[in-house]
Amino acid sequence: MKFAFMCKEPGSRRGKVAVIGAGPSGLAATGYLSCQGYEVDVYEKLPYAGGPMMFAMPSYKVSFDGVIEGVEDLRDRFSVNFLFRTKVFKNNQNRADVGDEFVERNMPLEDIIENYNAILISTGAWHPNTIEDFKNIRNAFTAFEYLYFWRLYEEGFLFNQFIKGRRAVVVGEDLLVVESVKKMLEQGFEEIYILHSSNINEVPMGMYWIRSFLNEGVSFIQYTKIAKIVTEQGIAKALEFVKYEPQSSHHISRSIECDLVIASLGSSPTPPVIDGFNGIEIDSSGRIVVDRYFRTKRDKVYASGSVVLGAIYRLGKSFGDGLNAAKNIDVYLQKRRYM
Amino acid sequence: MDRERRVLIEAGFRRLIDYDRCIGCGVCEEVCSFLHEGTPLIKLYRIIDGIEKPISCFHCTKAPCVAVCPTNALGYDGQGAVTITTTRCIGCTSCIAACPFGIPELLPIGHTIKCDLCKKLRAQNLEPGCIATCPSNAIIWGSPEKITRSMREKALKRISNAYTLLASQ
Image: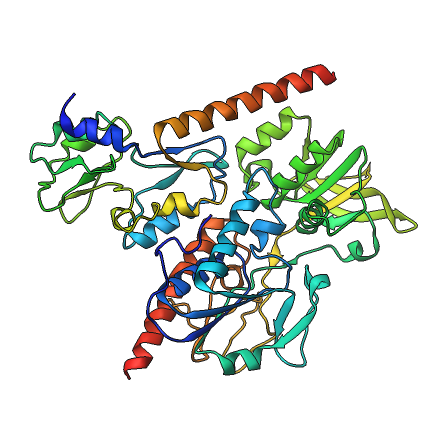
């Protein structure tokens, strides 16, 4: 996977650009900008570039070697500077996100804005929505964390084997359910229950996956509401839920014994500020507000990818967004030179 | 065999979308759209709910669109890509009717467009955009021998996996 696919060698533009977050959007932008000749510094809190491509997608989907090759190509052929294990955040603020365990250095956002000619924020959505009780339970995760921990184990960052068992319950219906359930099937879970709040036909994963999981013996339970997770010494033993019928007041309380609980309820954007900062506006769902040129209201600061649109599950969309944001940054920097 | 076709078979570059490996992420479509001013020439379609796959020109060596084009707007270039010279195109849509995959597209402006395997990038000795950026290496690019080999190796892997599974039962 090449990121600098548009040129053989760097162009003649001059200027320094910072890209915050080396996910699909940030890397696409880095490829475009370094092709034009800009000096690009990429800040990434994880130890490798690639974002969710590297840390949340299973190996049969993405060629990890291909992503690493693309990143090395950026580094060697275009002298892109990758600053790994570095978290960028506004001074005196912080927020705990997935992946913070790798952070060794903190970089204030203010310094970056001051030191570069343009900044692209593409920090993605690394804050999976969870269920309150999950925090203290050792075998309950969000789907995002489940996939992430698996990747860490595969990459040798985690040494203990992941929870295995017979029964698993998946709550929620977003697209990470597909990958999590596939992983569980691969790990030999015998009974997998997918609980969702609506009708089975409204589940975003689509009929193809529903049918294929039904064939594998996965059960879908529709119209449910989680009541309680039964725990014993910090380990979930069973999940209690209410099953109701639409257009009727009839409900049944049920309980499923389980060895693993997964919640897949979407992810929230993780901008490098908590609330608005000097023109970088954050909306009520945590996204950075940009216009159609990917500009924030703060001069020279741009944003693209999931941090703007909310968790995008489509790699292509993030990638395309990054390319278009980079093009706009290039136009902006060129205009400024002639003014 | 006419001279033109021999040249392109000898030049020997082919693109193949390996639909087994494709994850339907849409990077190819977005990159293509970026490279072609907002008109993607490789496009994903949702044929089954939940599964999306891309389709683009197959660059046939005996392309029906080239055969039917009345103004010779369609032809083969040096590397075997079927390309269109828009100035010659009269927008008759006979290529659309002839193409077994429905690839050529008539623009409102009055001429047809289709994938040219990123002519501009190839002129600089670069790979076409969709091939260079595919995250799952599902779009293969190379000589017919390379493509045959890669497909056969994949099939063999599947067969030998099935054998090991059988043996372990």
